Length: 162
Image 1 (tube, rainbow, N blue to C red):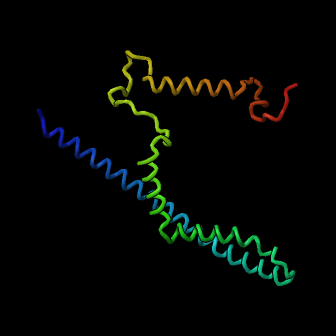
Image 2 (tube, one colour):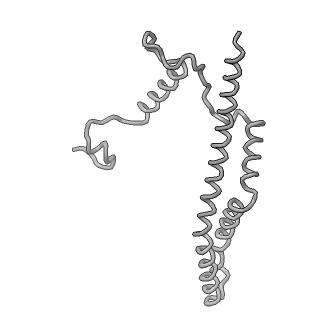
């Protein structure tokens, strides 16, 4: 029994888990930064819209002119909540709840053991999971795509061959 090898494996696994966690946090930070950058464009748009719609209301004395402010205000509030509020915490909590209570909603393929990859040259058949995926892809493509030899028809389906 070589306990040193097990410790190395556990250390590698914990490092990989930590790396995956950091990558997920980095992706979330990138999304928040993207929304904050979008706010630099959305705020002037919203303020300009409010000013022009209010001026239109003053000229026409009709509240109908102000109705576009409703969706603009909701969009602005959502982006503001995402960029500077606790929206990311709410999304993370909801994702954890879905993973805990509604695991059937996630269509993640079953992973095969790493012992099967790469395939040995003596065994030309792929693992069963890949066979099923390949056959379902072939069935989908044959039923939804009509093959043609005419290059013009292939590139532009609106043209008809004579």
